[in-house]
Every structure is written in C-alpha cells, then in structure tokens.
Image (tube, rainbow, N blue to C red):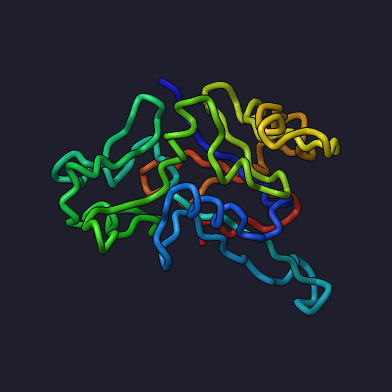
Length: 220
C-alpha cells in the first residue's frame, strides 16, 4: 500500500495562497470553506535578537488534512464513512456520512467541516480523482514558488515530485505538467533536523514540512 503525502518547503512558500485558490476551484469548495488554509507564523524575535526589525523572522504554514497513519477521525466515525484507502489517504464516503461531525471534533487540526447544503463532512481528498490517474494534486501543480511536492513516503521524500519549471514559452501547459522535477533536484539542501510534522496526538500525521534556520512553531 502506498503512503501518499505532501512535503512543503516553508523557506520557499511566499504565502500567495495559490494552493488554496486552486484547491477550491478544482474541488468545488464552497465560499467560506477551505481545504487548505495558509497561516502566517510570526513575526517573532530571532533567537538572541532584539525583537525589533530586522531581528525578526516569519514564515507561512499551509494547513490541510494530514492523511494520518492512525487517523482519529476514522476511529470515531460511527458509519465507517471516514476510512483509509489503499493509497494511504483518508477519504469520506458521502453516501455513508450522516453529518454527525464526530470526525471534525476528533481531528487535531480543525480541517474538517460540515457542508451545510449536503449535510455531509468534507475535507482535503489529496485530489484523489487526479492522483488515481497519475496526476499531481492541484495544490502542488499550481504552487508558483515550487514549494510543494507530492509522493509516496515509502520511497523517501527526496523522490517527491512537482511540475518542472520551464522558461520555454512555446511549451504548452499540458506539456509542462507532464515534465516533472523531484524535491531532491529542486530544493536547497536540508537535513533530517529540518523536517517537521504538525502536532502528533497519536495520529501520526504524514505530511512533512521543511524549515531551515527558523524556529518551528507548528506544534504550538
């Protein structure tokens, strides 16, 4: 079984929210709801600094369903609507969802919500309709700063992929999407100590964040 996830290089993320906008468009997410929210962390004083400009630092942190290894939302679902699929992602079978929102209350990250019109819970699906066809999630495809990468954790995050940037203006959009780069070939050097996860409440979140030379505050 695969273990699909997203890695975000926070040193490259500029907080443009293109991932959020692209996600809403391709998945038909209703106004007022989000499958990805981008938080601004900081400005906070640099370690040993005065706390005044320029001795401050900040970064942007995209938050979405972490497609956990041991998801609390699945444990509490009374109808098995929330379930783990063969690709390791956590999905919701809307035909089984009764809108009780137990899963939303159990999620440590507050990334589930009730669709008031359909009376079912929704969240990030990791664009399963695309990845099942060998495509990338839309938030990865549309990341202008090339900060987001998608892949299988069992193959290591260096193998994660994103569209390869091109300066050839004659190249079509479809051709660009078919040409990919890997995290190892694109991002600046990082160490294992630079790789973080959101707070682990026993659910083992899969998505990873790379952050260098700044204080990680994703668990605060």
